[in-house]
Length: 317
Image (cartoon, rainbow, N blue to C red; front, side, top):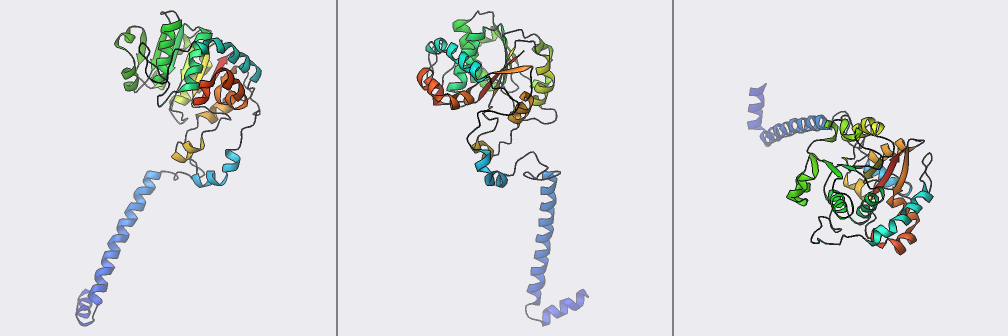
């Protein structure tokens, strides 16, 4: 057959070209089939955006934007926002606010400054005020950096130097670049993922102590978020304050973040955790209060409105 085709190719004009094109296309098909197989292997069980995938479908989000990102309701079913108590606490913060030592840019004698890329005005002000309000003996931070500078500066300026500061940070390069060499004498750095840290570290927290959480924000098998919710929070003593970062009212992520591909889900887990939960109280949530009490902030704590942040504070009963 092959010899017949070769003879025919010599006699029929253009047949040789057709055969060559066929062979080229055959190779291209094989290459495409290999690429499809490789992409299927990368995608795993289902591709991102599939209804079985935890990664959202951006087209579906776009079609429902008006509902997903509508103005937030003042109430969420099953969650007590303790709005009146939050407002009372903010009034107690006013004297602390007036004594804020931090500036927009770096200031001699302080580690922290507001104009940084990760922990800015409102979040830092609330952390500073909460530390002064609770007067903790121990602060444990999960996820460290500029927030750690707030804790250390507030400790140095207003608290007893014996306050224990523990930083759990598997990637400590930023923290190391911000703290002073002598800080290592008064702080403890655990350069490890949260889920590898012994639970006894958290069981030492006493009433008015602070557990500061700035996690990977992703609940998945073996994650730090799962370890936090399933193992750490149940073991905390009564009276311990807990901070979560990057939590926005009404427990949804900013639209721009979702379109960037940040498929975080910690906020949803936290919302479910708080529904009908009588063991943990909401103490303060900056985006909730700044949205519904903007006039208070404009009059009493205007710096908070320069960057509304995204923090929520809880207290275990």
